Image (cartoon, rainbow, N blue to C red; front, side):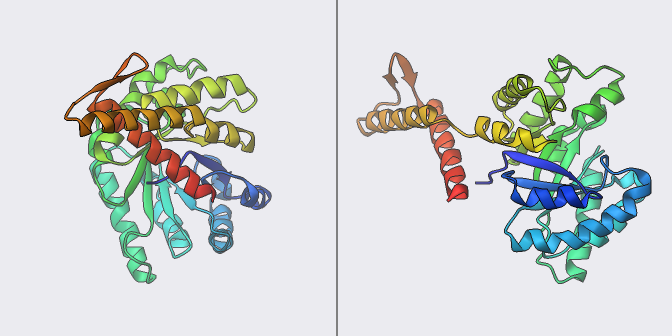
Length: 292
């Protein structure tokens, strides 16, 4: 089971930040060539990112690179610079159709073959961040076996909709839920938009809890101070794990006696609740293995 609770943005043109990221506990580091890099720095960021990738790989860190979108004309050069044995995945925004997914998949596949990299090594993490992408969410999420996850991008979505992005995020509820449902239906990870006010700890906690309740498995973070909080909130608590074990034990005991359901503490335990408990235990086990 994939554990991707936190994905930290690291600007690809900031060597000091790329060096600092080596010691941070994010599950994935995202070296960004897109929005956090001004146009005049794109080529410089591409070369800096290419140079640091081997060091991350030697340290055993999971690294993806967010390239510029297909409509910029920069995607091919970005891919040529970073695709290789040291890269875990490619992230790309402004994806609006299965055809977009197929195109980026083909570009990566061709470069992997040319560089002698095992086919499919570079997973894809794409962004649904426009109205059209939300309407085509399942089409996008199911377009390629190379896909690891799809993220919701609130900033671009609210821009496209000509609405304000608020801390309460009521304007994001439908598109966030749509991305989470489509990703789950396609069997890939749903990854949530970053909470951009990194000084608002209470807001981050509230937003992350909502994301988990909607079905997201992880969240992008823009500042190192957000990592521990988001990791914690996407990790089952000891109390949740203990209760899940009780649920599984109660259901298995009942099933051994030929019953399809039972009760625990006044709550019904049936096949769906037992399956939910087993899934939580699988997540907790995968996180525990990552820590060891």
